[in-house]
Image 1 (cartoon, one colour):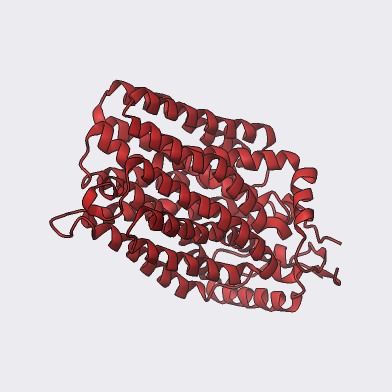
Image 2 (tube, helix red, strand yellow):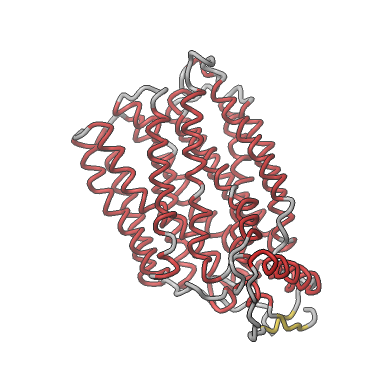
Length: 475
């Protein structure tokens, strides 16, 4: 254990007016979800093309589901490994490393020549993205003012769907066999993802370390200088007079926190919060990964939509998902976390009922099915984004990145690996009833997340992170 210090840094960060400095944080860190959306949607949009003999990947409808599971499995492993390193070595070092891993692996995906290589490349790509979730969510929440944290976190996570829309629109061009050969377009798509990753890496180099992480890890003077600089910049830009901060917290500086202490904190001190985190992540992961990864083959096999047109459907689907956090995000700071999380989870589960009916009866064809998908996932996307917000808020700062990683990994392993594998096999069966069962199961799992929010939700809106969960290092 180190020295005991008093700091006002949390209060100083929380009372800052919105400024260009905050926009730089969002640009440098929030754009990672664009990459994830791009990756997942490219596979979904190009699934029908990847299974064609001339594509050169050697995949089938079922093995597209295996590739999706490999990506998610990699994300789970990456989240745990990099999450631990993020809490130990800092947010900034790790969000540079994880983005580098992503860039290398997605380039490798573009050169896939056999299913096993495609699976391996997808696993490593997922590892980079999983590590990003832990490093980025913790950094964003520690730098954004408390009064705005909910809506900003939801918008940041919701930008996943901007990447998804871009990936689908890109696929429209890259799947056009009049422009590119069957085996080339999908390779270019993955290579372009790496280019975008490199551009983000350049911007990210200028994002600072979290002052909250610095003052706990024996670097209090550096944290104070950083916040002093930010305050001067904000005053110069906005002309605002920053109010004095009275609240001081006493912290005993320390190095890394042992894994045993982290586990005890989560499951002995906060058991209800742990159940909440798991329920939210399992629900959204099962629904999203199961349906989204296989959406292309579902439209192709059951609605006979041509592979070159499927990306257009997915653009509409992605835009609906993007609008959810954008439209509903501010209510998580005003109406509150608990009612909004419950409403989005339970609402999306209920919306799956007419979706399944339209699918089973064939009423309205692909158009009605797509419209009902948009309604369902408008709600589900806000709920899914709130899962990351929740686990980032409700555990102590010293464990934040690993808490995000743990609940993401466990929840996603249970829901995000089983979902793609199950839906892939159900879709390949050609049986409408079996696929409908998959929709119903997804709705039940999502509804359980909503029930957990009602029972165990935490009132974290507009509250300092240190008030929501007392730091382990508090003297």
